[in-house]
Length: 343
Ligand code: ACO
Image (cartoon, rainbow, N blue to C red; front, side, top):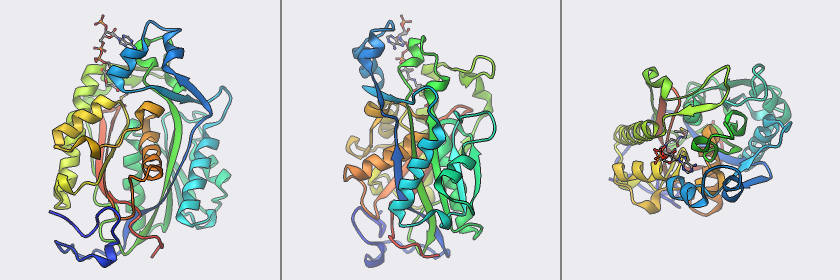
């Protein structure tokens, strides 16, 4: 089944194959931005220091390099750069912003969170600002919350930012995890419009029974995980949640133009896509350059996908993420369905 919103098409000019019920203002994505630290850590650097090899890292994870924030560099500045670029892309200014939601597990300080400082740096003086922690699934949760604020009429413009300095909670001597993570920030602007699909309903889930399979303790402060178990659960949860999100919108896998999932590692994404029956060419991967940036990975990937010409207005994008908790989520969104903010 196809809908009226496909890659490169303007939804207002294409008759829908299946008429959707009008539901008033829908939340949609209007802008995207990214910011990464300058420092690049290549596999060779890790190979020189740890009992690992370039070949092992690439074969098991697909990762070639990652970015790292310098000691003393603030993550809020990186988040603000990403948010500023997303606002510019959306053609909005800081005064328009009602809410700044920052997803992070690696904030500059225990408290305050990152969001108030990101909002200040942005100049979003009118905005409420809050951090959200749903580990690697945080961006999907934050996007769902932003869409709810917009569609309920409680906000008009929401900046959703994923900002992570995973190097702060990585055991750099543990070869099992040291090779996996990177730092970076990505952001999108969510606003309302008369949209065909916008940010469709998200499927979110949590199962605290598996909290010991992937965690960072308050004392030790570094990530520990049972890699194989995490892999198994991540594939099943992301595939099931994406399938449910599709069913809810009466869409088929064939309707997806691009699958942009949490960039944990290439094998997880390929296995999830295979479960869904998605061809490889519809799976976006930038994990080779960015590694696993936790909740920053999806907005970073969205920014890269657009820059690479793989996301055009109206494209149907499936988002999926999984992280510590366990928590997971998936949703179907149309990419920048309209250029003008309607509501
Ligand atoms: N270099 C060389 N050897 C390594 C390395 C390394 N960097 N890391 C582990 N090994 C060794 C192990 O010690 C083990 O050796 P042994 O057989 O002598 O005991 C062997 O490789 C296999 O180890 P496994 O952990 O079983 O390797 P696996 O094939 O499962 O791959 C990986 C590990 C890539 C972490 C995989 O489990 C995975 O993808 N897990 C998903 C978890 C993940 O990506 N987590 C990120 C955070 S969670 C999230 O974002 C969803």
